[in-house]
Amino acid sequence: MALKDLRKVVTAVALELNVDQSDIQSIQRLPGTKTGTIQIGMKNTLARKQWIDASREKKITAGVLLPDIPREVAENRIYVREALTKYTKTLLYNAKAQLNKLFGYIWCRDGKVCVRRESNSKIYYIRSLNDIDQLLKTT
Image (cartoon, rainbow, N blue to C red):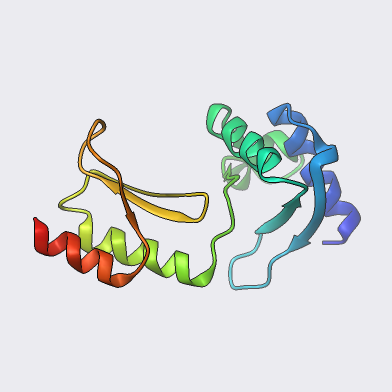
């Protein structure tokens, strides 16, 4: 897909989410086995937060953006999320794999892996595999 086509898709997402597309600094297709991943560079973290928050409130499907695509693909959801480093992605995966029975909530926000037992309990920040081991020992 050419950059011009990527820009059309990103513009359509921005219009659906009702966010400012002038905050976009760069657009690129990520290489990999999965097709469809587009990375958008934002001018600042506030703009990134606005896009992510708007996408949580309004669910977008591929059919809304591209009405001419096949029906089975049209139901696929479009996700807007922050890009994680390989280390953070691995840390989040390990936290979910090892702590899912002990903690009800495991997520990543602003590049930090967070866990909490219940919706009102204390948030623990995981910075390394040692932090996961410590949480396993204390419970």
